[in-house]
Image (cartoon, rainbow, N blue to C red; front, side):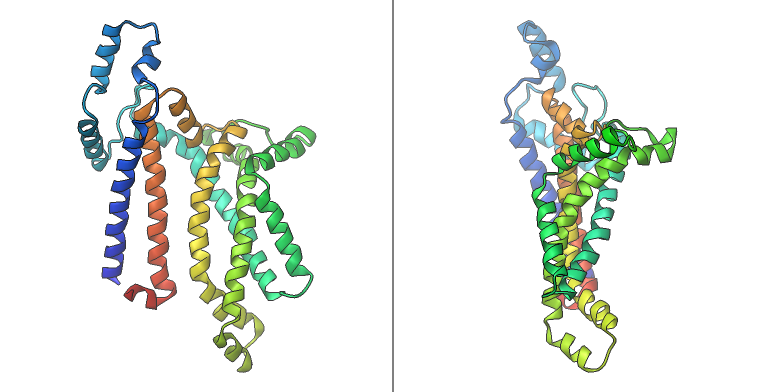
Length: 314
């Protein structure tokens, strides 16, 4: 078991280093001079040269990458050009928005998708199965930003139950904060729940079609025991994979949803970094996104060995 986890951990760390390299050198291809963004296009060449030297932009790309990677290994993601603050501090300020938004959307998607997927698989051939499948296909086809606009129209403009946009800090009242995050959480969670429902149904159908399910039923076990102990338990390997991919997708979709609802999260910070050509801030945020996704993959891989002990030996 320890060897399995160690191999997966080393592979994850190597992936993060490769992702950091790719992020850094890919951003070099983006047109635009951060010094010109800060000083303006009418700045004198001497002023631009002095600022480039101050920011380290006059150094070769390999030297800059080495310095940045060494800082990352020490927990330093660099200094924002536009905000003149550490990137890590800027990202930490947005976590109070992005973290509950993403986790809330994931929880909502699980609460909807897993029961619906199991029910659809158990009722294959009945009218309930195609109804759930059609509903999930419709949900998967609706873009999350469009769903967010629809929720604003229905529950903010028409009913005035929730705020249409903006964010209330936690220190101003947790209930007010949750109220401001409710609609974006629903917009994020419903779209992903539709995709997860279809995949959960497929995983359950595969598990219920195995010989051990028929054997358990033939022994006279109760239907709920056959479904939960034998069917769902053996489908969990696929479902856990779906959960990891879904959370990664939610993190990406949150960038758009935060714009729809004017939330000051990581997504908004990413777009501001792109607009301001704030490369240290942008590469720090992309590195964090990549690291989170790699970490989720690592957690999913390790969970396999607990769900199915045979996997740890491969």
